[in-house]
Amino acid sequence: MAEFPDLGKHCYISKCNKLDFLPFCCDYCHHDFCLEHCSPVIHHCDALQNKPTGRKTSLTESSKNKCCVKTCNQKELISFICEFCGENVCLHHRHQVDHSCEKLVPPEEPMKKTAEVVRNILESKHAQPQKRALHGRKSASTAAKVQLMKLKMKAVGDSSLSQTERIYFQVFLPKRHTDKEKAFYFSKLWTVSKNLK
Image 1 (cartoon, rainbow, N blue to C red):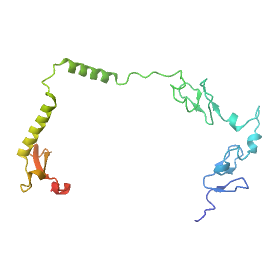
Image 2 (image 1 turned 180 degrees about the vertical axis):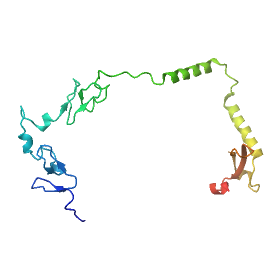
Image 3 (image 1 turned 45 degrees about the vertical axis):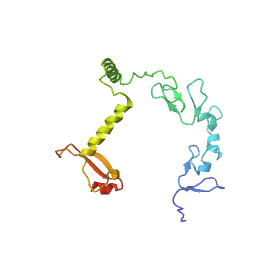
Image 4 (image 1 turned 90 degrees about the vertical axis):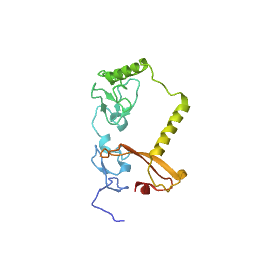
């Protein structure tokens, strides 16, 4: 495997000196480190410890941002500011509803007019007297058998096929044809490509 010494940078830790193609630059000491030593705590950053502040700083305390929700003790490395109320929140409470945002506008009922139209349609359907209903499953199955018999009477296909081998289709033709639909029968054993011929 070929190496590319000009690509990437070596880790600043002399014991490591690992070549990293995507090195991390420390925000405090501005040296380059590998993934293993990228944290200022891990590489014992001198610039972080010598940083002049009113109190002793540490990465775990100073660079974390506390959530504004009183019951939440979560601290984040990156501050998340609510764009509506301007409060600092954690990832868990980032939505307006989750941190009880002062500027939260309650959502209106979605599609109010559509819901009303649907309700009116349903009410009108219940108000109308129902037309004659089919009398159970027997009449539905009888109607299906009658429809199949009509289909078999009109169907065209290869007359040499036996009745048991035939499968029937109702085909709806394109608009340019004079007939809107036509019935055909094919062999159950034929492939789709042969049926299409």
